[in-house]
Length: 336
Figure (cartoon, rainbow, N blue to C red):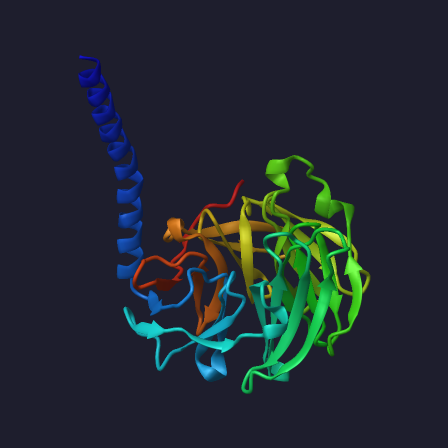
């Protein structure tokens, strides 16, 4: 009898487990079908499980994608953006001098024919670097070490470039911004108490993340866990909090669509439009895009008047498939 009841309990547990997992799996399957069937979705095969950042390189009609744990940069060349097209990622940068580090943020500096890549030790937070490569040749112009094992823990995450070619790299672990000169010289480190004002673990486990440069001479940077947007003067290094109506919580990679309009990718929703009409003293979330949440949105890039969202996770076992989805925004979500 005891054996019977044990068997019955085991059967019940198996049934409950099957029911418990069926709902999220069904939801994921539904989200995946919706994402891959939507117009504007670009699917491609990848040798990597991850795709941390994607940026559009217009003259070469390609996306540059960082492969995260593999520490490489891949490209997706498009003969023309066509719905449902199946493409193949090709590695273009595999830098032995940063082997063992993850590749993260990418910034394209078209005026100088180069792009910049952030590298970080994502396991132990003991090293960080930024490198510059030629857009045509792939030749490395510089590799700058931002932190070493003896420094404070760091997690270099994203990068932006100003009009003079200076690069700004966010540290999501210790909440600072490294400034690197045109030729790779480390010029300064921008710190502010405002970056670290939230001490609770759930508002500080991921710090400064996405960053963009505004033509009026400042940076916009998002703090992921705190849900704050900062305005940083590149000359004085003064930091201000942008008062945002609406939430940018869990914001990640960003793209400035115009002087007044910013797109912020993130875990939920997949992307938000944030707009400002007073030079980013205040702003408001005016639209949202809810895409395949299970893939975890990490970056956004503008492509011929449209916004495409990149996702961290590839799906598939024998055949890994990555997607970039066109963001179709729903308006009217700003807080009043």
